[in-house]
Length: 454
Image 1 (cartoon, helix red, strand yellow):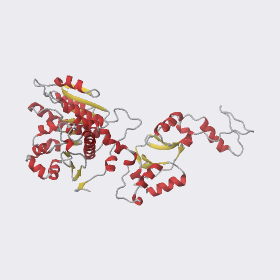
Image 2 (cartoon, rainbow, N blue to C red):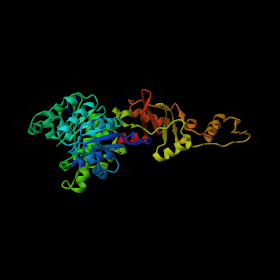
Image 3 (tube, rainbow, N blue to C red):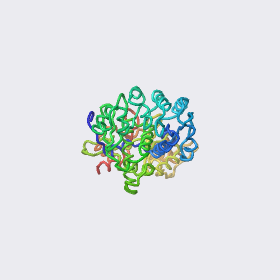
Image 4 (spheres, rainbow, N blue to C red):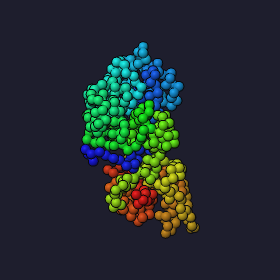
């Protein structure tokens, strides 16, 4: 609740995970720009990039001072690399600002700070970028150091902003001692949440704060107390921001899967031997239960009578256009193991195509019958409608020829008990969920069964 500490369940986190869709490409899964990697610190930027990729980002670019580029080219295979203007020491030069701003125009989120360096010139670059980057921005590590004790730049930002300090960085930002931060972590997190900024205060029981909300992260342990794990976390949260997850939710989910990945790695490798690279490698173990079919609904503490279609529906269902070929629709159903597909045009549901729609049934021509498929007629005394339907399916070319127009639908607020009754009475397997005329999900028999199981 507002103003109180929030403790989320696994299913709450599961609701925030964006599963890849059948029509995704690398541009739709989030474009992340990582800025950092000064000479001697390239590992930080590389870990952030790997964290972003493993968290599902479709496109990652790493921008580093030009002298660092050869090292990053060797360390990273997948991300795009940019070498930016640098001074004689290899740190970012003022000319890097325009280059980063240009690159950010093609990004959905920017991660600023991993391995950036702490020179005076770099600090000036950071401050200008914080003021001028217009996409969601995560500020970490050396970029936080560049801000000193001045939070006015982040407070003035209008785009979503996440800062990820540990206790020492929080103390510097607030102009107090680390002991004071440790003594009142909640107070420190709230004090850092200036303007619309979301704060991810790392440490035991990581805290995520923004406005009057405070989420306590339940995952992770001492295995994360090793060099580079914070950079991985920044990359994960950057990917979630790039996918359109709101800042508070991105920070909370990022902290949760980061901690779960660390715990999974520690179970296999021991807490002593766990490294930042291992956290990246074990991220699939953190995401897998959240993506599992049974993890999506949130039923804890609620009775069956209280559940609605919104609580159990499958969001972002697979859809097709009315002009898709019948063959392609059949292949898609087989590939996705689903028995029906909503047909959508310009965001509006126009029909539902089911397995039975794609199966030609009762096409039996009884004499005397005159049959001509080339512009003629079908004469089937007493069975005209049945024969017309069967022949239409027999020669169908597109989904629009066979779909069920004006299918049964429900609203997100429909009670699960009513949806279950409708499914039984109408003998259907899946019912589209519409909100303000738009398709927002689909409820299937299996969704109902999972809700009964709790």
